[in-house]
Amino acid sequence: MNNLIIIGNGFDLAHKMETSYEQFMKYIIDSNGKKVIHKDLFTTNLNLSYTDLKTTSISYQNSLLQSKSNNQFLKSLFDDLLLKNWCDIEEKYFELLSHVGKQAALYKNPLTLNSELEIIKLHLSEYLKTQEKTASQIDSYKSFFSSIDSNQTVILNFNYTDTLKRLYSDSLKLSSIIHIHGELDNKTNPIVFGYAATDLESRALIDKKNNEYMRNIKKHLYKQAKNEAQLIKHLIVTKKIDVSILGHSCGLSDKLILSEILNHDNVSTIRTFYYENYENYFNTMVNIDRIMNDDAKFKNRIIDFNSSPRMPQIEDKELQISTFIKYVAELKNTQNAEKPKRAHISF
Image 1: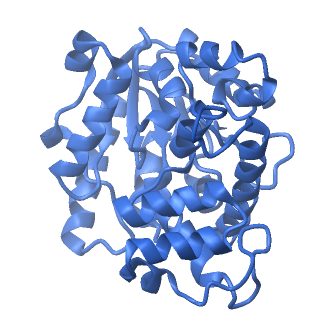
Image 2: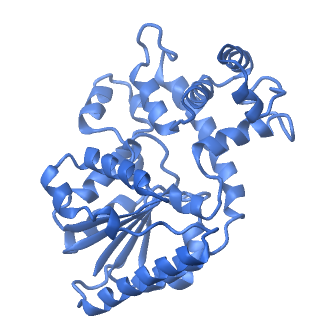
Image 3: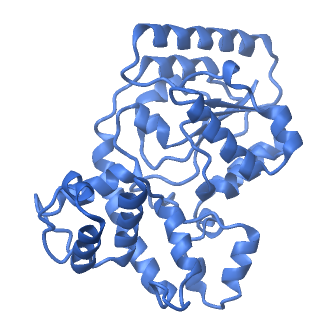
């Protein structure tokens, strides 16, 4: 069986790492004034915790952040988080970028926006380094990775953290790992942090004749390293690829590379390891449908909910663990029954 395993932030969250954008924003608020004031983000101490801020009035939140924030991009993220209880840094960036220079726009030029995003990226990188130290191995994942480890397996890791490599390298001795979004503190594979603009969206930005509009567009960021080329090579030469998605919501911020995978002619099946229940499975499926934009491929490739495994969590109970181990045993039997379809591709 030719496996392509897609790993997203839900994998880190399953290990109780606080790596969501909301958790990062909470850290920015709560740490401000406790150890150091982030002078590139705030003028003075906010004198509020994240919980306190969320329970105050909207008008007070806005006036406080407006008066004490040095970074307008950060303020716009707080606006989304406090009003919607959710934020996506990369999607928000493209929203603001698309309005640069327009009447009543927050930014008059893309350079200012890019500079403020760079500050957020640096803080995020430092924060994620602290989270890397908190993760410990989950036996269910060790069992899963051991069962699929072969020279026919490629793991496409969207996370910046070292969770997969540090905790499961002993179970992945034969598989190839592509860190598609780069790695923390790796100069030859720097982190990819931006927006996956479509060709139409990219053309609209290029037509503005200012290269700063393209500074954080992923199709250009991917050219910093060889990861994208490795993935495309795998897709081209490998037949009947079975895609498994672990902890990736398949949101629009990664639509460029996900469309390349999910619509490729060599992909046979797409299986999602869902978080907890059908609602989570459903939301990921809708995102996949939106990205694929091909009803026939969606119908023929997507594995249904009842045939999909629940994603293991570090606090799982005995029944949840035994159910997943049973799935792994069945998967291993299937893997052993199939003959190799290609030689190992060295990356």
